[in-house]
Length: 294
Image: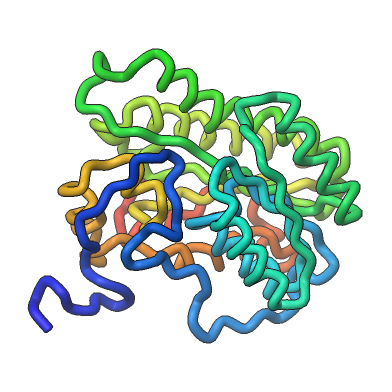
């Protein structure tokens, strides 16, 4: 085993050069596949009897979060856009735990669809206790002038508008003890020169999280966020050129990107009424050791 191929704590130090032509990308086409289930993770009914809605739950972080929620006793509704194969694979893992899973396909840029996701979840699973706003879009560009206006609109409509619409509808059904978790990003804190529009939306999500948490304190609904650093998900081969994919995550202290199953337990912590009770308006930072002071 050569120096560049060594196992670095978990997974490879880097991944083979690869690209995908469709964005969002497909987990089924990635080499190697992201790790969705933490090895040896045993649920302890932290979320027993709860119903979760996870946008972008078909792959990457969303898949891993959905599976870990199910292992903790929650039924899960998954919203996905394109890749039915990925969504069905996630559903298979969830149903293997004995929990229910429904799949909701559509485009979160459509306000009516955002609201439909919530109404279907409540109708088919009976409640909504945990909302994970996780779906997002990114595409790298070298300069601000290179970003097409359509990409700017798509990034903002997917990443921040949809969160507001989904959450507005969700709050009609949520009560004290329920929780909202938003996926922001390390780019919210340090920026990224090739992801200017994406970084901007993630900054908005961070601010939205903090403001909404204050707004909902009296209703006893907690709102928190997770700001991952480099993570091996379909985002990467579908939004970066092959040479950058090969180097992705090597600048972290771990020397590699994180895996989704290393991040998902943080969502379980925030969703758990008891473990995360003191947390609202907070952001967790699973980013491979980068200090962001935020």
